Structure formats: structure tokens, C-alpha cells
Amino acid sequence: MDRFFTVIATRVAWLVGRPFAFFAATLIIVIWGVTGPVFDYSDTWQLVINTGTTIITFLMVFVIQNSQNRDAAAMQAKLDELIRAQQDARNAFIGIEHLTDVQIDAIRAALEEEGRATGDHHKAAHASVERLLDRI
Image (cartoon, rainbow, N blue to C red; front, side):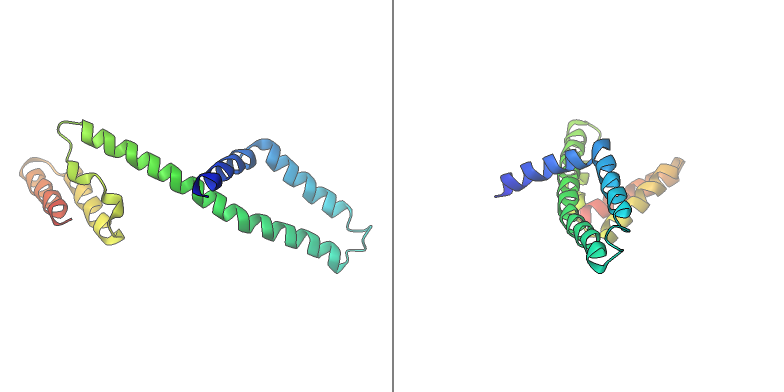
């Protein structure tokens, strides 16, 4: 089931991400708008576009989220490999995407401080990042 959904979601995401899909959707809206006078702008005429767009939007949320989750996981794996492969890199950064937002914000703030630091201040900032990573 998981593989089936992944294949379908990938194909749908690829298809709707193409210019043709945008122009097809625009054409459908134009046709719907032009047919308004033919159907006397009835409630059914309005319901057709409202229902169609609601269903498509609802389903696309899952397709987009699946694509983003896979892309983020693949990117994270690549970054983890780059960290692991670098001799001077701090391997404690591998897997920090599983931390809470507060923990990640603290690490990011310490890293930004470390990046701005010079001289003895640099050593202190480096030590604070190391302490944060040790607590993980």
C-alpha cells in the first residue's frame, strides 16, 4: 500500500507541476465561467465548480505533503552523509531534525553566535554549541 501510494503521489505531483496542468485548470475555469449565462448562473452551476475544486484541493494536500516529506527525508539523509564524511564535522548534528523546535532554535542561535565570534569569544561560542549537542 505504501509503495502504491508513493508511486501514485509521485506521478500526480509530477503531472500537476507541469505548465500543461496549469493551463488545463485555467481552461476549465474559463469554460465554467463562459457557461454561466447558459445555466443562468444557477446554484447547480456554482456547486459544480465549488465541489470540484474542493475535492481536488483536499486530495492535493496529501500528494504535496507526501512529496515534501520524501524530499525532506532524502535531503536530510544527504546532509547527514556529508556531515559523516567530513573529518572535522561534528557528527552530533546527524539526526537533529528529530529534536524539538526549542532545541533546534537553541543550537541555531549558538551556531550563529559561533559564526559571528572571533578570538577568545569564538572558543566560548564553540563550547556552548558543544554543550548543547552533548545534552541531546
